Amino acid sequence: MARLQKENFDVGKEIRALAEKSRGTGGIVTFLGTVRDISKGHEIVKINFESYADMAEKELDRLEDDAKEKFDIIDCLVIHRTGEITVGENIVLIVVTSAHRSAAFDACEWTIDELKTRIPIWKEEFTATGKHWVEEHP
Amino acid sequence: MVTVRFFASIKEKVGLESIDIPINGPTSIRDVLNRVANETSVDKAFLMPGGFLYALNQRMESLDTPVNDGDEIAVLPPLSGGF
Image (cartoon, rainbow over all chains, first blue to last red; front, top):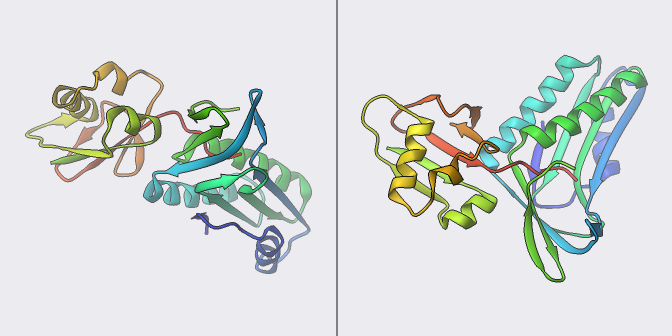
């Protein structure tokens, strides 16, 4: 089940937990998104993620289900943080377990691409000179 | 009554987290947002610029989707989740 949470997550612990309940796993692909220190030439102090939490949680669950239906994988986990996050910290984690690597790579890339277009979450960047909402898909 | 919720940059520009709009008879998301524009200082072109998404009861829908009493509409600026 997907999670939307303020607190940080332990990548190794999340990978082990998903792998342990994924019988038949031969490969695990992960994507970890973190806070960049530079954005469009500006030094980032921190970022804030706002969400439409009720909808985002449901959409994240649907995203996992869609990935499992679309690709020949065993399981998929998505975690996205909200609130204020500092440079270098974790933002989003996707873990995909599969019997073979190809499907796991494809599913992981598809899931992060879909997340950026489907999940109602917004990023606010704080720089030394101010703050602004990011309203584009890098 | 329909509740309209705003997020991120829209919430800051509108100056509200949400607004309740009474409805009477067949109504669409577009109709409700026109009412929001009439009852606030927000221009309807700002609420419906072409690049926003709209959710009805936490599902993405088009502006022409019918709404019913008790529904929740959300006006969503371009999404920017992920890294």
